[in-house]
Amino acid sequence: MTTFKSLGLNTELLSAVEKLGFEAPTEVQEKVIPLLLEKSTDLVALAQTGTGKTAAFGFPMLQKIDPNKRVTQGLILSPTRELCLQITNEIGLYGEKLRNINIVAIYGGANITEQAKKIKRGAQIVVATPGRLKDMIRRKLVDISAIEYCVLDEADEMLNMGFYEDIKSILTHTPKDKSSWLFSATMPKEVSTIAKKFMHDPIEITVGTKNSGAKNVNHQYFIVGARERYNALKAVIGMNPAIFGCVFCRTKIETQKVAEKLIHDGYKAAAIHGDLSQNQRDAVMQSFRKKKIQLLIATDVAARGIDVDDITHVVNYQLPDEIETYTHRSGRTGRAGKLGTSVLFVTKSDRRKIKLIENKLQTKLTELEIPKPEEVFQFKMTHWVEQIKTTPIKSDLHPYLSKVVQDLEGFSKEELIELFLSKEFQTFNFNAKPLEFTNESSSEGRPERTINASKDKDRFFINVGARDQYDWQNLKDFLRSFLKLDQDDVFQVEVMKNFSFFSTHNKHRDLVLKSFQDLVLDERKVNVELTKKGKTYSPKKQFSKGKNKRKSRF
Ligand code: AMP
Image (tube, rainbow, N blue to C red; front, side):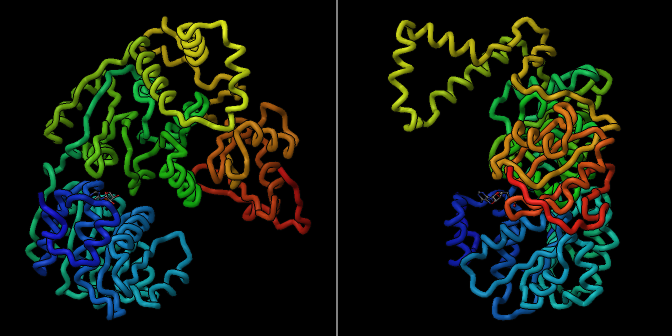
């Protein structure tokens, strides 16, 4: 077995490897690390996210730069703020044992002066998104004229996002004799153009098959009617109770609609799309990463840079237009040596596209039938039993045990199990047709009104959540009484750890925004924002500041 030591890493980096618990190098690391350590070469590496590529370029860069020089020696360009922060964090961990190494992230949507200050203190490695970096170069807040190593990470994504001109301009500020390392999941024409134009005889490395989905992803598809997607999704969730998944939709409206339906049906789901502000997107992503959310419903654009390990399933609610997009979507699962599943819902007329995907990916997609209610039940029951068997005993309950044992004395073990089972699966509908059985509601007891993503509805973000002792019921009660609205006027209340969402009819918009203006609760400014069609209105922007700060407890 190849070891990290045999790849040529120094003792400091090896001790970080040990601390991180990496047992053996991944394929891309095995191919790339020795090459970059030994040679000053340009490199084009075709590798998906999740293959360990950050370490593949991160370790050689850390080992090669001189920590005694404060000048910026390594530059890593990445498509999104999310990914930029992740790379900075990962490389920070890899270089933890190296002294005097500063790694600074620069990205849009955050305070530029703060970032400039950090650079000024000396950053040997800068991880940047192209737009912000270009801006900072123009303002002379960063100097990349002496870099020795330049990484273009997720090059295909950067070009997809229209960063070609920015990248071109950035590269003109770098020395000609630097080493450039380009990483990309796919190799469209635009990426080869960049490689030809800006690199000198790059060595090309491919991990897995060129342009293919990750090897450890199992691709499955269901033939569904156009209106059956939602029930098919619930069937997939039903068959995989421990699912931690990302569902891709084509439009923002669809994304929101699917998330709302899932929330209404009692799942921990949230939507991420371009109508959310950056802060809201960060908050949703954080909840997803911490597994407070089980299902993330995303548009392709919003999902760029989603780099979350352990995603068990990617669901293609609709087929994407481009096969390359399918590669990106399915690359979100099956990461770091784990197995993942990519599920596609296709209508009969789209069936031929399956062949195209198979040809492109050089992989067979398995057709599955929507499971029958009995099969779903079997799965749910097995999962339930497993959960019971592994539930930690809550010792606080001991004093009450004997009373319950006494109350249930007359029942046999079988009778008790039957009772518990019946209680748990009371609403399960065994007679439904395959695509209808999912109507069984796991949201029993939630009197929330279902409404469609209608144009009359406003959805608000509020910066209080479960850590403030809220659940959807008491937050709804608070909002109703605070806003003096009726029971049905506040709906679809969705509580996360640090923040929540709720909806009202849009005739209440001004009332909601005005009421929360300058509201301070427990020493904290409550922030309510409206998300609508790409704009975020906040009370601050809409209304003048009130003088009297209201105080209230909830
Ligand atoms: P990346 O492709 O760089 O985004 O890496 C995906 C994940 O794999 C990250 O969470 C890394 O910490 C992890 N990882 C990287 N290299 C290894 C390795 N050799 N063994 C186990 N996990 C790894």
